[in-house]
Each structure stands twice: as structure tokens, then as C-alpha cells.
Length: 231
Image 1 (cartoon, rainbow, N blue to C red):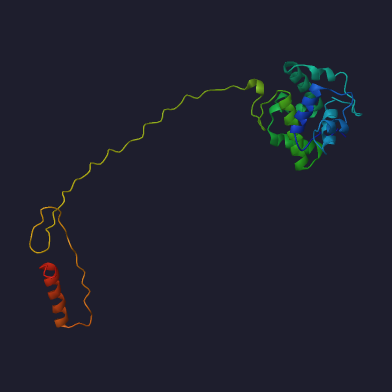
Image 2: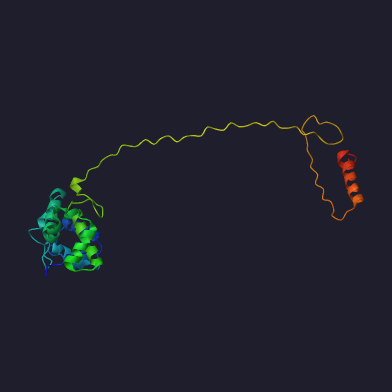
């Protein structure tokens, strides 16, 4: 049976491991090595499987003398070299999708790994994410999780700005000036030369009162308010 494709739950650990090996590549890379570097605690085995799958280290964890020099090169040489390691290790993927494997949608990669390795959806998803992480490190795709085009073919088109039509501004409504109506003054018959005063009187008539009661009320109002006799 063909070797199953490796995976890890945190793809960021792959970049950490590759970065560390480019700084210093120990003669042996094992779980203790990764613990020393504080990379992927409790997940060291998954990362070691990825390195073995790429033939970076042998089954015993010893560094591949043929591959190790690649990790000391600059990005312009390292990325193509890593891309070749990935292409060789994932031969079945490239046999299926060709060079477009680098940018194959994640959903298709998941389906491929699940079918090829007879794995669960969770494992297939992690296998696809691992392949995508290696593709990014190899400089084949941009940093997006599901790239649409290879990094080397990315073009940027600037769309001309569309001038928005000016919003119609409603004309201000002219204010309508209504002249105030002077109110005649009330009191003892004298006219006030200044401010006019209006007095409103509210009368609550008792429901059980007779005609004499009503007459007395209106007489009191006339004498005390209208004629000013109560002043």
C-alpha cells in the first residue's frame, strides 16, 4: 500500500520548523530536538513525519546529506529546491492535477487525500492544509488559504475610480413670516402702550347649581376681573 500523506493540526508549526532548520540543521532531528526548539509541543511526531515524507531526514531522524545544503541557501534558491522536494513527495497529487496541483482548490485536495488514503474528513482536511502550507513555503502560492492563481502569475489591475453623481441638495424652504396680531389689554379700560396681555379664565361650573348660583359666579367675574373693582 502506498505511503499515506502526512498532516498536522497546526500548519504554522511547519513554517517554524523549516525556519529553524534554515538557521541550524542538527545532525539528528527527533522529538527531543523539536522540544528543545519549543516547536509543536505534543505534536512532534506529526512534524517529523512531514520531514521524513519530504526526505529531509531519514527514518531514523538523521539529516539527509544531499538535501541539508538546500537549507543554507537564500530564498531565491531555497524556494525552488523545496518545491522540487514537495513535487517529488506528492507525486500522486501532481500526477492527478499536473502543475495546477499547487493551486488546486482545497475542497478538491481534501477529496483527493480522502480517496487516496482512505482517511476521515478531519484527516483529509489537515492533509490538504499541510500540502497548502508547503506550497506557500515553496513560493508557489500567495498567503491566502485557498489561492486562485500561482504567486508568479499574480497581476494587479487598478480599476479606475468611478465618480459618484453629486447628490441632489434640496433648495432651502423660505421662511414664512407671520406678523403677530396685537392683543388688546384688559383691565380697567386703560390701554397699555407697551406689551399686550391676554388672560384666559377657566370656569368649572358646579353640576348641581341653580340659575342663581351661575349668576353669582359671572357677576363676581365681571366685578373683579373685567371691571377691576377688586383691585
